[in-house]
Length: 397
Image (tube, rainbow, N blue to C red; front, side):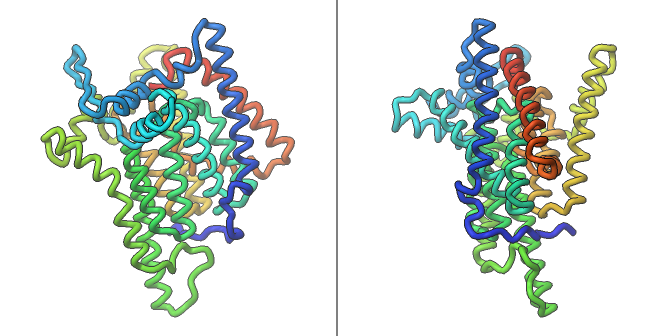
């Protein structure tokens, strides 16, 4: 069984000063991505800012912030797109920032996401630093920043906010701050449905800590170094109690609001043709790519991509990542790949699964600084160009 052993790091290891190199590198990567987007958009006589704040999900969040819930679109095929599908924390923050500043709702969404992206980068650093050390923490942030869909981190979407809450909840688990972990997991559950992954991580880690306590008391031996146990039972129990309140509260409210009971949220998602089918729809989507030669190349790319994700998860297991990280990453991966949602959105749905990147961060950390800088620079340039091309085309749904 994977344990919860972590590195013994000095007090204050998650301080801003310790994370500064990672955050500066993250800022540089994001600035390069935004610059490429501005230049690419200008060449096409477009404004880059609306691409970040006024398309797809960003519009739905802005509408919730401005008008509340109850808006829906009925499509000719009978589908009903309701804004109840969008969890409330991001629009709540947009509304709050709009109320206390001159910013529009769209501007507020951009500011919230911008700040959340740095909080997420800091959280990714804190987790990786706690487990593998500072250099790996810096590399983990940079690898997360240069992902091909990294431009989403700068959009008025909820991925950055969710990743920030998830990362800091996981860090709280690793350092034995159970009430904090549960509270942050609850907030993550108010941000996206995949908040269930954070809840599962908190619960799994807490249960394991109870088991470890029992084994320790039975064997009358001192606890293992770095095991996130030993906290008062009441605090762990309270953390477990708090963790599911966010996602459960919103889902139950939707069920009551729609009059369809506890599972009413599933009907809302069905109106968007979203659901969990174990990956059948995605597998069929990939198989359909092999009906013609040009699209078959895309099919091969999808298979390679999924295989790479599964291989990375297997490496995480072999490297004995803390149980909380494995449960969280596995749940995010399963929910993204096994959902019947729009397939073009799957890359951005995987953005919060940052523990999958830790093996790559470790490999990058082992390189000389000059070589790792060259690798990151090349990947950052490629990510910036891809992001600019992506948003000026169909972009992330």
